[in-house]
Image 1 (cartoon, rainbow, N blue to C red):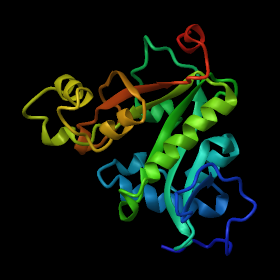
Image 2: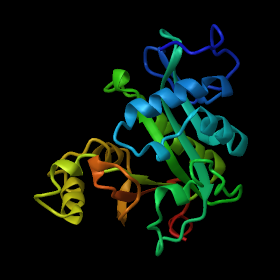
Image 3: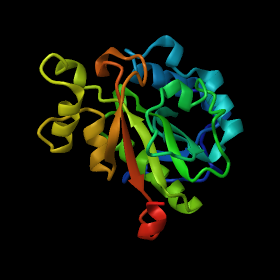
Image 4: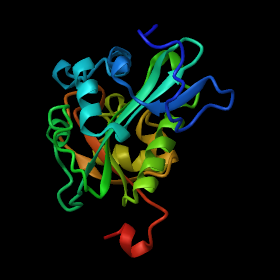
Length: 234
């Protein structure tokens, strides 16, 4: 899993680190593109090939909104262990149900608005070999930290309810999401996000092509606690 990288990542700003210092969150770099793509492929084996991000996409993101691109670097193995990609948008909460590829400009982030008031989560993934080590916690903290530094209203995303496929014959998606929200069921993605302060706003049919979630997305919202109530909810 070695990337063609420098001997260390000295000089890059650190946006979070594991307690033992092995893992750090930094802004993604062009030379990390192959490693970022490898993480994506490993995390989303059921995703339509046309919806996967490749090295070229990750390099392009850095030219659009470099502050919103994060990677978790493993000092021990000198490789990318996890990553997230974000852009800025304005959100119409009455019309939130957009297909994933439309929202992210076919993975180019061409929909990014430099003055957008919300950070939109285009992608997040932790390589299966690194799960259960707190890396998603580091990435969500970095994203929320970016929201606060930029004074944005919050962070939104289309969550993939990857556990729904196993329950699809027993219940509709609305019941599944409701029971996950009540902590009666555990979803490998949505439950994690709700523990990090995100709340369900609604369900998006035909969000993407992924059998594990029956193509559904769940629109989730985290509001910037630094803003006043009226400003957060404007």
